[in-house]
Amino acid sequence: MAKGLNKVILIGEVWPKDPVMSYTPSGVAVCKFTLSTDESYKGEDGNWVSNTQYHNIVAWRKLGEICSTYLKKGSKIYAEGKIQTDTYEKDGKKNFFTSIVIRDMVMLDNKGGNGKGPDMTSEPNEEVEMVSDKGKDEGDLPF
Image (cartoon, rainbow, N blue to C red; front, side):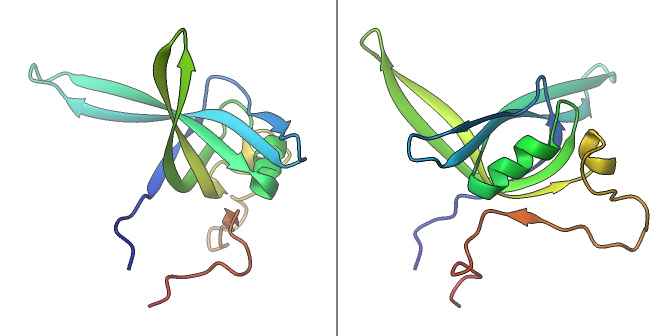
């Protein structure tokens, strides 16, 4: 049995720039971008306070290619993935960098926000397709 669960669900906007696509030396596609999420609440003085968080997103393989093709600055998406923290050393000091590695993504705005994707607003009862990085042998939990 697993000792824990590392799962993140975010709904936000690609911001402040377009996704960047690159390839590893072995040819594996990787797309990186920032996703902003907003929350609003009433402060102690009764005025609304807005809080924006920025998340470093990484999408691998086919999902990365799809993100690079259809997403741009301002695109709204639903994303599922996991938190991953990497370390690196600079000037003799250990630094940490946290990102969200997504495995599933749904474009929430019309045509992926840039006119190149599928139109998801034409039929109100039309199902939205989730794009996934999961392999065919991976599936639901084994219980």
